[in-house]
Length: 366
Image (tube, rainbow, N blue to C red; front, side, top):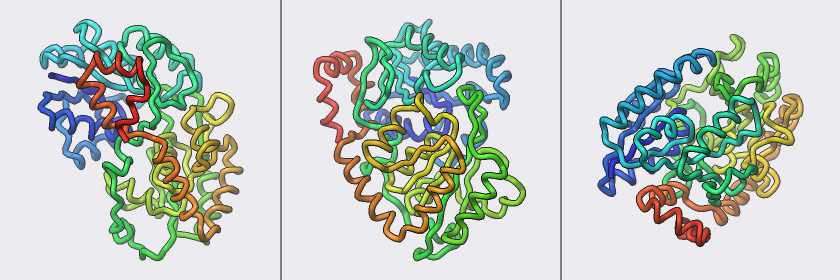
C-alpha cells in the first residue's frame, strides 16, 4: 500500500517515526510530507527521515494563513504523483490535501478545539467533516462525532513507550555534569502557532526569577523555541535536539510553558510543572488526567505559583523515586499507540469496524 504521512511539528515527527518505520518494515511505500522549519531541520537530519517539504512554514501567523492555499496545492500534487492509497496526519492539511484523491484519511489528534481561538475551532469543524476516522486519547474531553475513536494512550507513547525508548545516561557527560548531580530542565515556548493566539507563558523576568530560585538546589539547563533573555544564555542546554528525551528522563524536575514536553516528562516519570494560559476550565484532557488521575503533573495558570511548586519539588530528595512508581502505574493502564496506529492504518477500514464493535481490541497493543 502507498501511504502519505503529514508531519508539521517536532512532536508529530516523533509520533510518526516508529509508525513509518513499522509500515516500511511491513513492505508499504511511505511518502512523508513535512513543514520544514526551525527545530524540524535538525530533527529530520538527526533522525535520518526521507521527506518532501511541502511548506517552509512562514514565521508569522498571517504568513501561515496566506501560504495555506499554496501549501495545500503542493501537498495535493505530491500525493497524486505518489499515487497514495491512504493518508494520515494531525488534521487540516492532510485532510484537505487528500479530499480530491478520495482516499481514506486517518487523523490522530490530542489538541482540543475548545481550548483556544475561533480559528482553531474552525479548523476542527472543517477537517472533522471531511476525514474518515479521528483517533484521540481516551482523556479527550470533547465529542467529535461518529468518526471519533478513543484509545487509552497519549500521543507521546508512540515514542516514549518502553517498547521504543531506553534512556541513555551518557547524557550527563554531554551536559558536562556528574551522574550524581541533580539538574533541572526548563523548556520555553515561542507561542508562534496559530492555535497559540492569545496564549502566553513565562515572561522574561519570570524566567530569570525561576532560574535564580532553582540554581541553588540543582544545575539548571534551558531548552527554548524562542530567544532567551541575555542573562540566561549561559544556561542554554548543549544537547542535540534528538537527545532531549534523555535529558527529560534524568532531570530531577521539568518546568515548562509548553504542551508536548510537559506530557513527555510526566510519561517518563519526571516531576513536571506546567504553566501557561491554556490552563483552566477548558484545559486539554490529557493534562487534567495526568494531574488528577496519575499525580505526575502540576498545572498552573499563574507563573508565580508554578515557580513556588518547582522550588518545593526540587528540594525533595526522593521525588524521582515517587514519580517512577507513578509512571509504572500509568504504563499498566495505557497501550502502545504506535503499534495500534500501525494496525489501524494497515487494516483500514476493517480496523475501524472492529474497534467500533469492540473497543477492547486496543488492549492487544500493550
